[in-house]
Length: 274
Image (cartoon, rainbow, N blue to C red; front, side, top):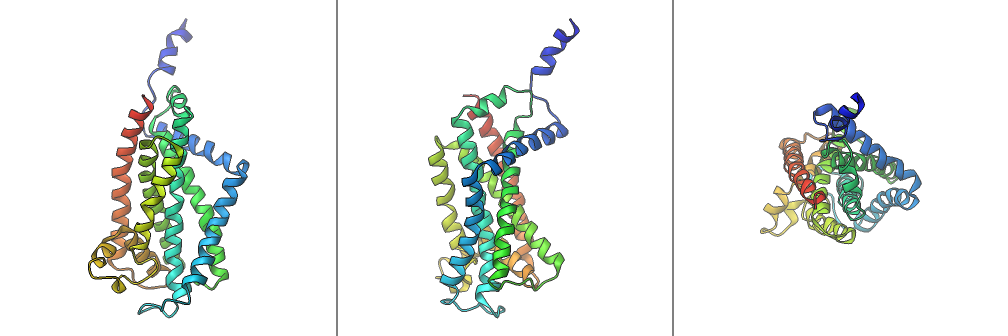
């Protein structure tokens, strides 16, 4: 009788509290991470993409553009940090595609029927995609060293630059989460998740100095959050003072995470209840 009396308490409303959310988020993240070794196509893509980005951009653009003032080498010391930022940003697209797939398959509704913290479904997805991004970045960094990239700053500066890249990528995972929950299919999530990232990354300092851009485009590129994170990480990897770019990049990452986490969780609750 006592067991019957506690049943509604155990299986009623979803648990709340910070520890519940963290525990359930890690459980969700672990579920996604266990799939990676079994999904050969996903694993190969995660390894091949960073290699392709480094090799193509370095050897296609490398000989055509001169290094901006302050950099003695365009290919290794200026271009590659921009490619690092672009690759981790593109890696955030997995979040939107994965959530759209879970919605179309009805998996989200099954998860909502469990006594778990509902935000953990999205948090777990973003955390697992962050780990995937870390693995891709490790491969990309190895290839970058092979083609001549060197860390000219301190180890602490390099660690700070890398963590900033991951924080920025995690922030944009929340934008992708909102996209994945808003569109009607996996195909639409894939298209909508990538199309806006191309102007974001190319109208920036990732590949050229913004001073070389037309006057009407330069303010847009300078204020672009992708420019801020690229400038900050590039400076840190090269042993240069990042100045205000570091704080702008952190501010953008924090703001994007907070705003789009709130919007994504609200959208998730509405989408999953349909």
